[in-house]
Image (cartoon, rainbow, N blue to C red):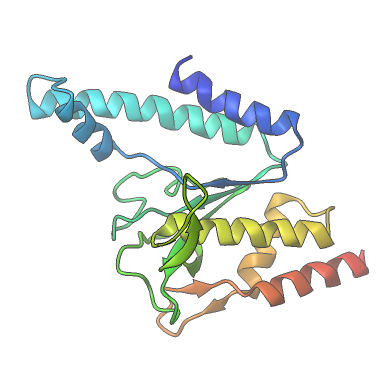
Length: 209
């Protein structure tokens, strides 16, 4: 199975099992492909590797967009990445992709300040704690981990709670509630999720329906 087919297979599996929210704590970029090609000694020159990387990346990106679009009733929560750069500028995906059923999450530390590693940019909708978060690792042990891979699951969890109190909501409506109840910092760079406000807003919307 090619990567292109795999992306659709993943989403088809989710649709088959009536998934409402999916955490997507992963990603790729043209630069990442170039580095992998170099490590595998593929491509005679840097320019050739860059061309091959671009081809592979474009194929995978198109497949990803098509798969996401095929599941409008699933909310995909993506980690923004740990590049300390603009996700759209470095062409990272899924963080750099815009879709009505997808929300990208950046990371802050426990004080609510922007984490030094988090990616940023116009596609980042909200932020959650991504610093020294207690995380389950293979083998069943827990470890304090840092990264946007720790912040996006928190927003996925929040989305699931919102749907628990108001299951009629569509992905775009869940995203709107999360964004509208979040607290924007004075510098405008951080939009901190507020779980209590978000769930209360979802409950109020359900009562009004």
